[in-house]
Length: 300
Image (cartoon, rainbow, N blue to C red; front, side, top):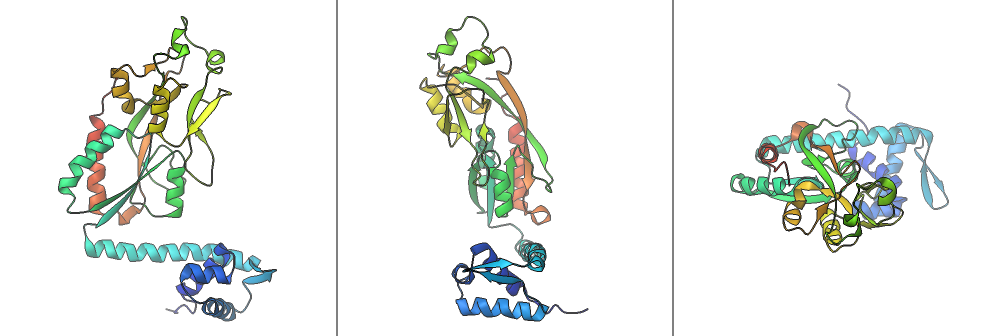
């Protein structure tokens, strides 16, 4: 078998130069000297026999060949990292830490119950929890390697298991003017009131969660902020039913009487971000979460 002449470190240096915008920036990101990065990339081009970069002004730009090879090198480096992590997982067995990414619409009671049941069995495994909204989950998968992602949006190229149905319900405080309507509320009437919507947490995309017929909207960063604002009497919102149980019971929030669409339902999925490298602690947590979701209250 022929041994590769180009090293992973050379491809990594090339990627850094392109991604960071120059040799100095790449050197800073990789904690190396600028001369070391310049030599590494120059050696790579010498070994290949043609240039991968051209300098325009102060910025390095890829040649056409460079673009093709850079794309392939990204897959190569990811596979190498995945291989090392798989070897670590096989060697260590029970993972010392799991990274969990959860869409804020996921039923909080089910998640908390799973955490309670997981902790005594965790063997000291640490949990890193990151809450996201909408396509924020896809961005986490793209930019990192979380162990588990709970989301309603499954990116292309990922396998996902359905885990729970999430119900969203349109609510407002009892004092809100919409509750004074004698007839079911239509879209035209609803559009005249302020709606509280939840901002997509992804930095590369921009979406809002909810019905966007209203010309008056307040945008917040999370579900709990939306609940608290709507409970004060400011506006209305579609919010996760599971998180509203106490507010409905205490009559701090009341479902709106709409012509249609008061309640909406969508599927939440579990995605193993590391695929076959998923460790036993993560698999145990998913099993506990599935059981917890089955015990979710079906009605307010």
